[in-house]
Amino acid sequence: MWFTNQDPHLDRHFFLLAVIIYGISTIYSVFLWRKGFRQDNWINYFLLLVAFGLHTAAIMLRGFDLKHCPVNNLYEATTFIAWTIVAAYLAFGLWARLRFLGAFASPVLFAMGVFALMPELDRHAATPQFSGAPTSLHAALALLAFGAFGLAAVAGVMFLTQEHNLKFHKMRAMLSLLPPIQKLEVITGRLVLAGFALLTVSLALGGDIAEKENKPLFNDPKVPWAILLWAIYLGLLVSRWRFAQSGRRFAVGVIAVFAFLALTFWGTTLLSPLHHP
Amino acid sequence: MIVVLGLSHHTSPVELRERFAFGEARVPAVLQLLRDEGIADEAVILSTCNRVELYVSTPLESAKAFEELKQFLVKCHNYRDPLTDEIYTLNEPQSVYHLFKVACGLDSMVLGETEILGQLKKAYDLALQHRHTGPRLNKAFQRAFNVAKHVRTETSIQRGSISVGSVAVELAEKIFSSLENRHVMVIGAGDTSEKTARALLSRGARSIVVANRSFDRAQALAAEFGGRAVNFDDWSNEFGQVDIVISSTAAPHHILTRAKLEPLMKLRKNRPLLLVDIAVPRDIDPEVNIMPNVYLYNIDDLQAIAEDYLQQRKEEIARCEKIIIEKAKPLVGNIGANLPGTTVSVPCPVFRDSKSKGSA
Image 1 (cartoon, chains in turn blue, brown):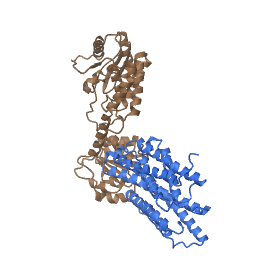
Image 2 (tube, rainbow over the protein chains, first blue to last red):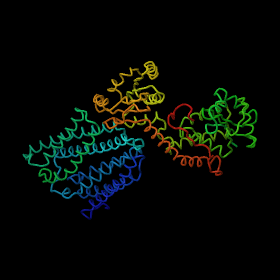
Image 3 (spheres, chains in turn cyan, orange):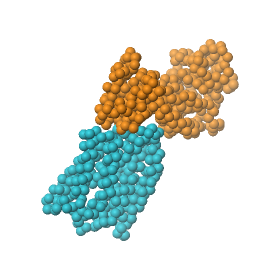
Image 4 (cartoon, each protein chain N blue to C red):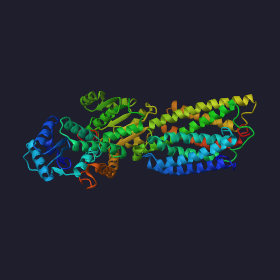
């Protein structure tokens, strides 16, 4: 069959190519940002379509190689989430008014791709890392929460872009296809709230699993990291709704916290005996 | 052969145009007369604030047709003063191109406006109803409407706002999720602020509060908008509720400063505030724009946006003309693939509502 994986790393090569195209799309997106998203852009859509093809091939090769759904370790989970994001974008992008979202999607996809390709994340353990219903649910909810935080950060960047253009009376603000800033503010807040709820459930499940399996929780660096993250997001939400923090500060906070999450996620995972046995 | 004879804002002042205007009730009789006198086989009269044009399919040779049509127009209006270049004449294919340009808003005073298309359709329907059109004009007008639709979807000739009022509305739409249920405050009841408030109301804004030094004037304006008037000294009490403020007082100093606005913003809890300052000298201290959730635009900012949009529309003219030439080919063939060298002059785009009556 055409998809027989002769080279054991062929799927990773395909994924690497996809990430390179995500990178090219990210660079191209900078130009779109500078132009202020005046119109839908087919070039970026086409780049992401090509990358999607390579990405799909990578996932299929891995799936046929394993003979089951290829979501067993962090590499596979990350590539799968990135694949769903690009697939969703390509579907939304069929609508001309939403095609500009590619300029926001490609940096996220590129960052996720680079993260997935980091060493040690693609280990083939004897048993899948995400086995058993509670563990799988814990991992799925955590990944969904991080996805929501990521989307909130993207909405936050959109908000800051449009808010800056409106404040400084740039024509880009009028020509841009970005939604109204009040809507972006609401979306950012709701995504953080959704991510926070998912993370809360995920952490509670994780604690429960560790307790049942008699595993020490607080010796694991990932646990205080996750609690710290949870507390920071709680702080953001409280400052927003209790103390009427401005949309700009909230957006900056959401972006900064997600940057911290993205930069420390890989390191804490590698250091965690619970998550990287 | 289709010919056009007329006068427009390009060639004549309003004082002359109004002398030649046709009331709608009179048009069928005039069209009948045109045909009875043998000048036209088919005819449509377009009469708006900015143009009076006769679109005629004539059996006469063009020079003779123009002479007869001019005399007919003069006679119709009992006009006795001398005429020089006020009346223009266009022969095929320029007449067809002109019809298409008019339909697309390329010949309008407010470049790219859409009201003219409605007026043109109305003029054509009137002629059609009274059976004064035939195969040539039917085909030309139907195609003109089709071209106008095509130009509207394929180019940006109608994109953006080119009046202060509509720019303010567009700004509000960039800030607020929806204009529905937004509260608007007008401080100082000037003409432009009135137009701006009206434009906001037409897009769904809920209520208007008017504050003016003359309370009677405030009450009159508020009644017109279905809003309410407040004493001029009490306008700041409303800041907890309002989302958009349009200020145009004659005050010689800033009536709204950062020090005054800061405590008022605390009442608003994260809600953005759009301040439109169209007064000269300005009513609102520019420093308030530094504050979070405050978006301040003065008259120059709004005019700059309107002019940018207008520039963009002008840049679209070449694309529109290309479409017109292409679409006119089945009617006029390939001859004279140049559009009439009239027409796009746009005197003062700002302070003119693109949707206001008579912009065509």
